[in-house]
Image (cartoon, rainbow, N blue to C red; front, side, top):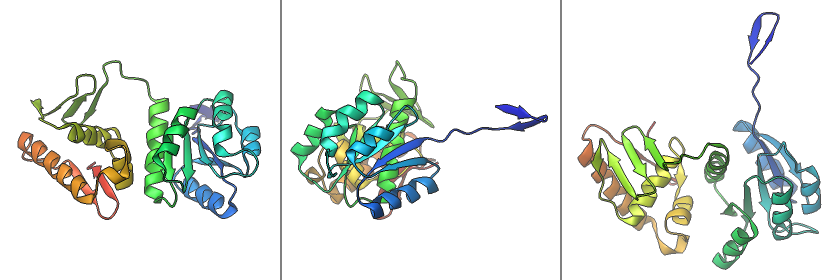
Amino acid sequence: MMKSNNISEVVTIKTKILIIEDDSEINNMLKILLTQNGYDTTSAYSGTEGLLVHGNNINLVLLDLMLPGKSGEDIIKDLKAKNNVPVIVMSAIHDIEKKVDLFTLGADDYITKPFHNDELLARIAARLRNGNEPVNKNNIIIYKDIEIDKNNFTAKCTGKILDLSKHEFDLLCLLVENSGRTCTKSMIYDRVWDDENSADDNTLNVHISKIRKKLKDCNLNADYIETVWGIGYRLKK
């Protein structure tokens, strides 16, 4: 808070995202999308340029893999060494082994092109929140009257224990950790089932229905989960 001439002025520091993408149309599209959603951006069109402009003012990096000169894979460690902020890799490569290799190199998340804008925004928000919020030593997350203890793998609603399967527990955790934001189907498959090919829409719908029923058994007067048609699910505000 700064004051000038007795008038209170609020100074807002925007989150700054570095976009490293050699395709100028995609780079510009990302810049517009992020700017419209309240982020500040810096663009680079090669790995070398990305390393040059990366610094302490950057809060997150969007990194294309197929870059001229130094590839995205080659610069992940260098980016982390210069300023250890979340790096989300963007690529058309679907190979699960490639994804694992990228995480080993230091990538924090991976999104497959072409992606839905809402999914990208959700992943960015999740990475920023994980990196900037203080760690809860008790590892307990709360949404309204839902309480999840990630240490003991237990969940309660209105104080009543929810009898959840592993996938149901992981899915509810994901929704609560991203409360107010849409979790896309692709994001859910990636985080809950580890692989988009190991689950389908029917599997996801069944798990959501079971969670809804178990929450309803605890609180008849509340609806917690809403469907975002064609995209995914989110918790109601």
